Image (cartoon, rainbow, N blue to C red; front, side, top):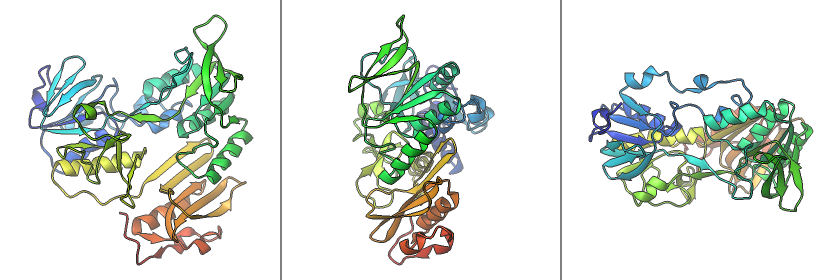
Length: 426
């Protein structure tokens, strides 16, 4: 590791990557894979080396995984590849060529990459600081939540997004009483269409989860004796008994350092298709960014996924080295909520029609989305073959004719058709 003065491998000819996230590690790895022999310093606030975050709300919370099994790389990997991993340090100030941590460490650099991720959106309501009110973003969050879940009886999940529903599934499978409170009129509103939202509400209710929609949270009340949460107060004045609360109401991109540098930020650090910020000398990747739509190139979108973090980091590494960017990739996502396995390929926003295939009531179906007859995306629930077929079609710039797609007995992969006007996405 570099010394207090920042010399050693973090010298002035090196690359500084701020954020030991999936994107941050991938960027460092990609630099080495592309032949970069310069100094690379990867700095993260957590005391832990980079690890997988998606399992925190699933396998880890359920006790089926531990931190060491989630690590991306063996401890020796970093030294073996000349990557200085600095854990437990928060960079508080940055200017061209020099960054400073909260402890006073200085990190000179020639190239800068921001992979700072996002922070949980906080509820600013009375009682939000009571013990028993949790957020879930990192390992320590998940470890605390898992420890309390072991003795909890009544769990309230505030927010019906992926993390909230995944955690609700784990809690319900453990025999806890679970209520999901969602302020919007449907679950997973940012990720799926109303048809899929309605399916998930019914499916969770069938499993014994109470789902309250269009229900805002006004505050939290302490249990008798104070100090710990005892109830969730809703906007209509009613209350739900709770001895454990998980708040999952979205994430806020971390743009503080980008703003110090004067970079353009609009709900995230603005980057182009080459992962360049408004200062071409600085790149950014992962959940902290907004980028041109990966298919149409229009507008700015924020994509929170493992696939995007990896692909954008690979592009950022190529940009730093002046190499051509890798071909664009089709966005894909997943959410495993108990035995409900949702896999998404593409982006359904802007669709004008859709086709449902399979058995919705039997929890084994997919929805294909189209615009002007062109395939845009698929939401597949417990139909992995449909997901893979659509992902393949989108990657090839092909389509699946909507009329034929409705027959769930015909494998989608046999229906993939090349289109003359569809450019390959990857």
